[in-house]
Image (cartoon, rainbow, N blue to C red):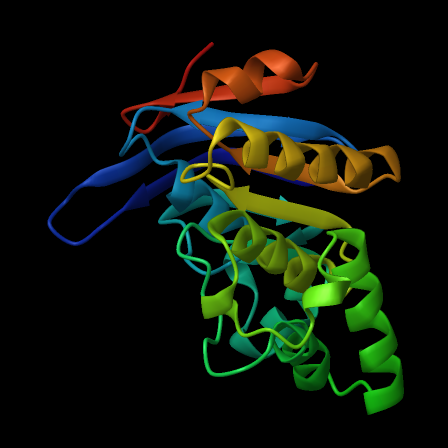
Length: 217
């Protein structure tokens, strides 16, 4: 499902964010990506989504080498991906419902189908009763759940999450991870970057550890 083969990522100035990264995540697997701040976790997730491209090596997602995809093919790749970022990227001038609707509108779904999917996604994360609220009126945990609803509204086969519990207390963090577990149970492939030891200890899932851009054995 996701395969890295000798992937390197360098930034201008010579900084090596990732060095010879090789691993594979099977379809339907749930895996954690951990490491210190600056270890390369976000960069690795960005490579999976083709937000960034490697300098060498191959990144294969669902049989496609995303490192060589043309820009016009990227929207089709990302329809299979749900992306949850550290900085939320919510639209604060639109309602929760409109935030979740946006990916479907970009993909050209008709309004009736989009609305049905958006409300189903909001219901899945327990926010259906807050669909008219703007994100500014939501708590931190609710904003994170809104990000998850937006990420899953396309019904992706792969979900990528970058420190999804980083700014939440233990109660909210547990709620978020329970949502992820429910996705895993229905066959969604998950790769979750986290440094939260409490989260890592609660789930029986493979952990990939990065240290200074290198994958640890």
